[in-house]
Image 1 (cartoon, rainbow, N blue to C red):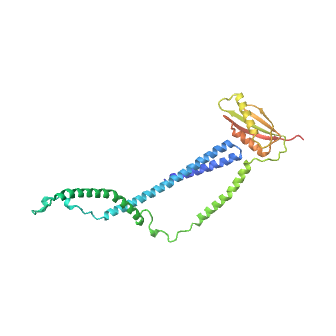
Image 2: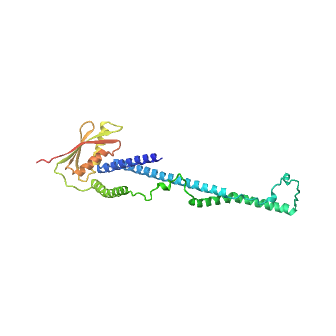
Length: 305
């Protein structure tokens, strides 16, 4: 059971690190669709880890309850063993073996009132006694056993003998120092990662570069209809969508078809580096239906002297 739980924690932890790292990577690349998929996978892994943790805790709780019930049952059995036998409260109703009289005579008193009223009342009392003994005694004894279970000695196999334990527990300074260092490192790493991610994904105005235009070369493939007309429409739709995702104005943007689904997009004036990253990420994310795109290269043309 411990091995299975360790494997589950290891698999879940590695999957969470993998999904989280790719979520941050796709966000910095402005590939929003892939970032959403990675974030959804990260949530699924977190739910898996939480479920494994809850199941392990419930298993431990169930084991403790079973041990407590076993100790209560053991105490109840000891109470039953120490109980004195209940005497027969109605000896005169018990049957008599005439062979045990050994020749002596026993006078039986048969008074009509005793025979009728006494027999009825005794029968009712005996029924009440049986019902009360069958219903009240086990519950009362079990409650008493539950109270006494805390006073019983633990089983010998549950804990090591007292002689084998050290008088003073050893100090674990190394483990405590490692835990403190990990906590401090995590607290210091969170703002650094947060700042880097915010800087990579924020929309801000930048100084235009000293270039005349920005060129983006990418390949477009479609699923299903792979005709030239379908690829042309998909490339045009993808280019018009992605060129508007930049912060800089790019009204002068043209798309030229080269060969084998390869297209060249030219934007004038040239885009800043952050907008080039956004344009590249949008093209590779390819949120157009049944379309994939791969950026083959990018560049900037210098201004004429």
